[in-house]
Length: 384
Image (cartoon, rainbow, N blue to C red; front, side, top):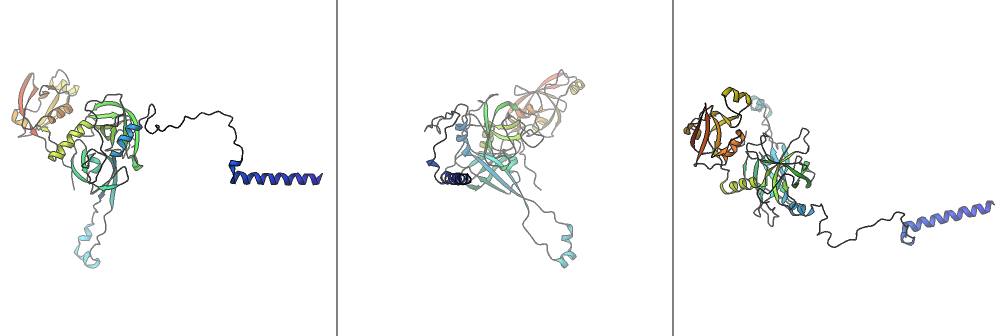
C-alpha cells in the first residue's frame, strides 16, 4: 500500500511539473477555456477613426488641438542690495560684491495660433513682465516668442513666433453663440499637458466682475484651471468662440464658473494691435459712480438708472462740452446708460474726433450736449 501511494505521489508531481512547463512555454497547446458568460464585441471597422460615435466631440478636439500652444515665461527677480555693500570702507576690506545670476520666477499658460504668420492670442496676465517667453507647439517643438502688443484693459496680448506650416484655428461666426451651447476648453492646466474639458455656455455678456476694465465675458462650466489662461474655448465644430481668461474660485481650482473673452472681441483687438500697435477707444474724461437707492433719494432722482458724474477732468472733452459733477448721464448717442460699466463701454466704442449726443439729467431738467470724443489714454503696465 505504501508503495502504491509513493507511485501515485510521484505521478502527480511529474504531471504538475509537465503542466507548468507547457503552460509557461507552449500555452497554445492547451485547450481554450470556454467563458461561462457570453460577451459580444463590436466588429472592428476601418471607418472607426473617421466616424465619431454619437455624443463624441473628437472631431472638434482633433481640429482645434494642434493650434493650442503652451506658453512658458521667465521673469528675473531683482535682488535687493543691502546698503552696506555701497559703503566704501566695507568694499575696501571685503571687495566688490560678486555678480551672480539672478533667481527667476517661472509661469505658464496657454495660447492660440490664429495666423500662419505666427500670431498667437493669449492673456496679458500670462506674459506680463516676462523677460523670456517660450512657446511649445502640439508637436513638441519649442520657439522663442516676442510680444507684438497688448491691451491690459481687456487682458489680451499678441505674440509672434517664427515657424513654418503652423496649424491655425478657425474663428466661429460672431454672435452665433447661445446659452446652453456645448463648448470645449483646451489648455495646459497646472502644467500637466494639453487637456480638453467639456461644458456648456452658462451665460453671456457677464460684466461687473472687477476682473478687467472692459468686460463682456462668456461664462462656462467647462473645467478651467490655472494654466488654462489664454487657451481656446471652442464650439462642437472646433471653431474658436472665446479665449479662456479667468475662474471664479475660493480654492484656486475649478468650481464650475469660468470666464472667456468672446472671440469676436479678441479678434477686433488683435487686428487693431497688429495694424496700429494699440487699441483705440473713445474717452471724455469723467469719473462716474453707480446710483444707489440712497443716492437717488439724496439727489431726488426718479430711479437708479444712469451713471452719476462724480468728477470731470479739467480740459477734457466732457469739460469742454459743459458736463458737470452731479449730472446723471442717461444716454450716449441715443443708447441707454444703465450704469457706469455700460457708460464706459458705450463711450469706448465711439471713434475719437467724432461728435456724440449726451443726454443728461441736471437738477430737475433734461440737458442735451454734444461732446467731441477724445482718445482714451493707453494703459501701460507699471514697471519698477
